[in-house]
Length: 110
Image (cartoon, rainbow, N blue to C red; front, top):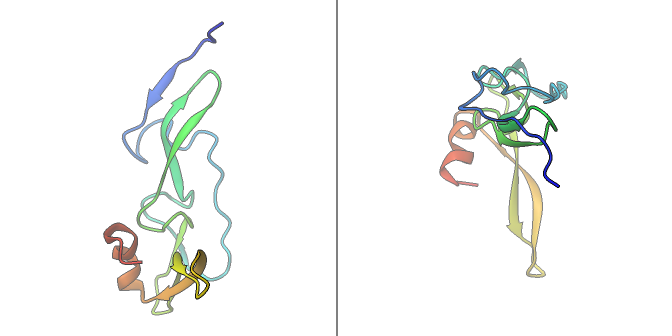
């Protein structure tokens, strides 16, 4: 039996239901200011069902999902995948300059 639904498509972080049930990201102490794009959420709903609140989320390209950005000259930590010497992929944290961090995720540099 199908359930009732009211699916809404969100065009971006400025859409009315973009941040419905999306938690605000806590500042981890390494970054300075809330992201100007996602306002500290790190992600937003690209699609949400207003009846069941099931959703599809988009990660913010500006802050890479952290919700916070670096405003000074400190390096920014970004998650990355590299091949281990044993031949399997593993997650690492890569530190890049602030100017490089803004394009790293979008251009696939990391």
